[in-house]
Image 1 (spheres, rainbow, N blue to C red):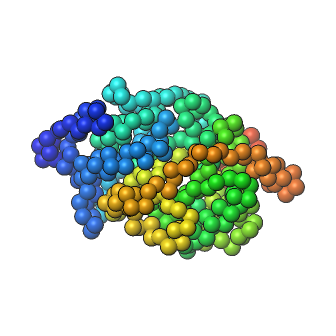
Image 2 (cartoon, helix red, strand yellow):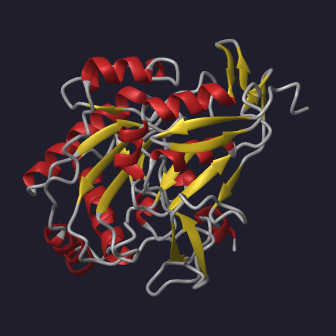
Image 3 (spheres, helix red, strand yellow):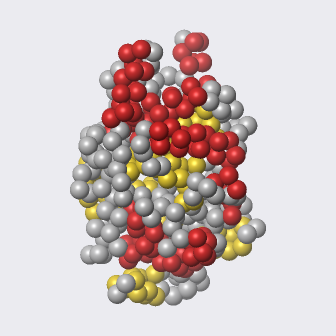
Length: 346
């Protein structure tokens, strides 16, 4: 099998030799063509500095596809590698994180391009960094908002919601950055001061989502349960819960055609086609347009005003805690974690 997919070889990455096995193994084989492991490695080598700007020194979950991604119409299985693999080279750095259960683990913490190539050789298609750095793994330095169009809505609706969200953030003094999700949605990031714990930053995301929902009630929802969302754009506030991550900027997504989660400018947002950003096209687009996220982190936002908005929702509107992800322990103040229609039947 190794011979069938090419003999192992070494690639040099900034002076570090990284072993590449089965380089000709197909990862995608679909109407767009064949993409091999070597193609994936070449992509991450070409955009290593940009990808590192998104994941450097961050605990990062590796979404791995050991048997390929999509082959002849069949999507292959993946797993999320949250623990450090048993055997890692010396150049792979790591950091200890604590999961919601209280358990801890060492997680890959990329600091160099060689680590990206090593991970790609393991079948890592998408990098999912935490919104913290190794300097303080318990206090996020990024506020991340996931705008997810539900059935009946599309990318243009996500754009409308994102533009309105950006206006709100700027009114509070923040500088938002936007990228495609690699699908129909958008991700909005803001660099924040790493002063607050996960629960606080999650509350800021909830308050911001609720404010956006009040402004655009026919377009936006924060409803956790799918049966209550309707044909609207869902603000996934739980992406700011501990151990919840988004695909990094520049990461390839496990979808037909190998789309990329692509940073874009706000001025270009209304005119882009997210399907145009793929493993094959993104490096050339990056060379032509530069990195729209180069300034992310140059200034940091104080989320205090958003926490004031959270308290206002609690004290004046009676809106409290929202449901947590299903694998979380029961959290203080959380409403019953049961589907509303099932609760009504009960």
